[in-house]
Length: 127
Image 1 (tube, rainbow, N blue to C red):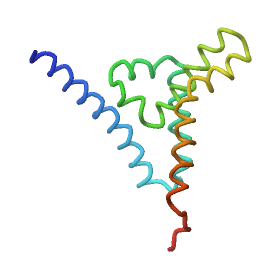
Image 2 (image 1 turned 90 degrees about the vertical axis):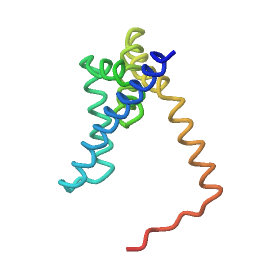
Image 3 (image 1 turned 180 degrees about the vertical axis):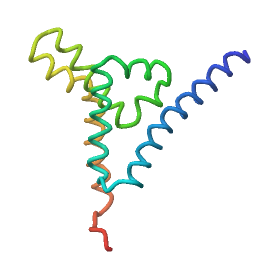
Image 4 (image 1 turned 45 degrees about the vertical axis):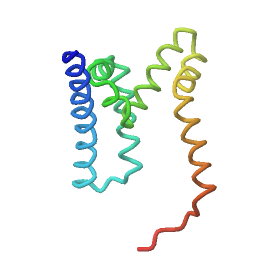
């Protein structure tokens, strides 16, 4: 019984350590460069794609679970993983595989953004 709780706790520790490290790297980039948030997001997503393309990001996912899949680099991993699996069916599968693998997350983002837009009024930020 205790071993089961220890295993769950260790999973939380690994997820927090890996996810926190990814976020810490992003924060350091924000603090010490003039890159915009959008450029940093794209950079991290492309790193996830590149690492999965090389077969390295899967080891991080196996080790840390949600700590590696929740940050934006995990979205890149998901796109690359879908494209790799879809490419086994041909060129068209390589393009559709990435979109079908990420369709649930993309759909949820669009739907929940629309719902929030119904409840809240957007304004421009005053400097």
